[in-house]
Image (cartoon, rainbow over all chains, first blue to last red; front, side, top):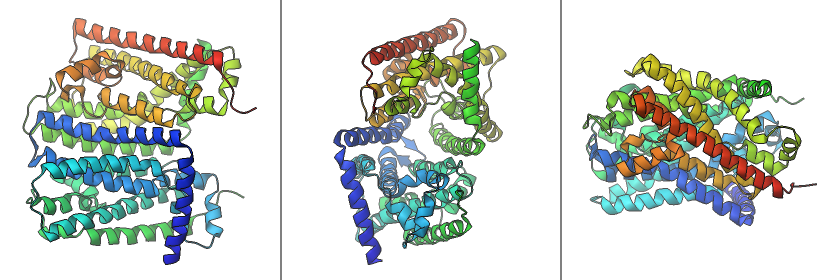
Length: 267
Length: 262
């Protein structure tokens, strides 16, 4: 485990150094991704220009949800977002190289692509978080701070698990990569809004089967001290870490199953 | 004309070759359609009208705009930029056919494929779940015309931002930025009708409104008679203007073109 972390740091460190060599390219890229991630927040502002509340949520509370979803998704994207290009690795046979090296396959795939430029999105989300926290009156307690602090890594693990399971589709069809987008990009978009605005079937499917409700909604209810408009059991507000752990286990199993199934296309 | 037709067929076939990519993409558009539909419906719990759109209009907007995403290819189009970067553009320039005309014909072959296979399935699914609005026969005809013009306006814009690659090797940031601008100001991310009136009018006047919001308005019958003709004329104007600017940029670029590598 310690060994894996060391190897990861060396691999990622090398990539960061190489990406920073092209300064203008890096700056332009980061600038572009900063603004494109800003659109979702502009949409929220435009919506709240027309209404004071979406159900029982005001603009500051939704900004808080947005920030939490956006930051954790951006970190996930930075760490493993290159899994979007994983079908290419399968198609051109480069995944075979991964199989013969003495490290975990998922570890290698993830460590081989680290996109520092996506830090721009993390910054953008953080700006909104600071804005949201400064306008909200939260009655801070140790437990509230703890729930917020724990929700960040939990959300990253949940998003990562979705991404890994989605990437596995490539073992069966290399054209279907965009299926994953529905749950990754769609997932962060969904988590930016309070779950009680969605229809029940959508909530069940994307909130619980794919546990997106545990990314922001439940932790936010607790931190903001809101009563759940859906009237679900309150203990769910503390379940994000457990759900994240379960999601990670499932993702690991699916990946293993998929790799076993894999047959190289090349001769 | 015959040549354009042949190129257009290639545009269609290029995308028809990957049916699973089409299914996966249509699926993603559908999920986003549901999300946006419920978000906008939450707005209408406390409003009956926003900028001339009622709840039925807004939900129809959601499914129409999701269906138009790929038809007008609103997200990053890189093909020309890559050809410029890797030098293949030189072979294009050697041909006795203007590259802009080539790519326009290609795009006009691609668009109907995306309309039918990426656009129609999400729309039909949306129509099964929600109560959508449908146009009168005349508006339907005007919509088809408007959508075609939208594809050309979008193409004109894409051609220009791709041409940046002639001057700038690191074009990725510029393309992302251009995409940001068109996604927000076209009414793709949120209907222009939800925006503050001044901003909304600017977006309608700029080429961006012509890409999403104008065809949607026409489908919903929000523009009749002279207003309808006015919107179509504005789209036509922007289509021609952007093509002309693109042509000008191309001429300037080819005068100074330096091929990367040997």
